[in-house]
Length: 206
Image (tube, rainbow, N blue to C red; front, side, top):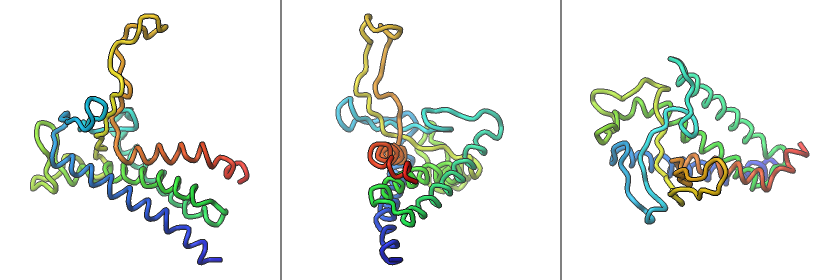
């Protein structure tokens, strides 16, 4: 029985390692090959690699004040520790492989962005008006826990002026999808959507 439960960790562990590898490899490549604001097209005007850095939470939100970034990074670390602990406990509660994988995606995505926040300020110099170096001699651009999250995936599927007949926003310039994100964000989103669509009953029963 214990062996069966332990085997449930195998697939989630593979998912976590794969997401972390792809996420960090893509971010390091972007940091060491592009300047902030630089971009190139992958699929016409619909899929663009656009290098930007997120100093706060999703969609550029930030916690104000001198210690705002420190509070945010610390919160992320605590949140990821709790997610990891809960993920580890799921097999004992009879969770399905699908739920375990969904949890692994959320955990890996959160961990991927934490690595940026905690370490990137020490590992790289600035990307403004230059391509950053890995482990620069002069040191990194920020103290530990004050790093910025690297984003690069941009899908402007529609860009133009909205029809005048649309209430409130009619005639406004509109871009869909405007946010720039990364592999870690994608993993979190997929994991959350999967849980909401396919695994809600598990939490109701629990």
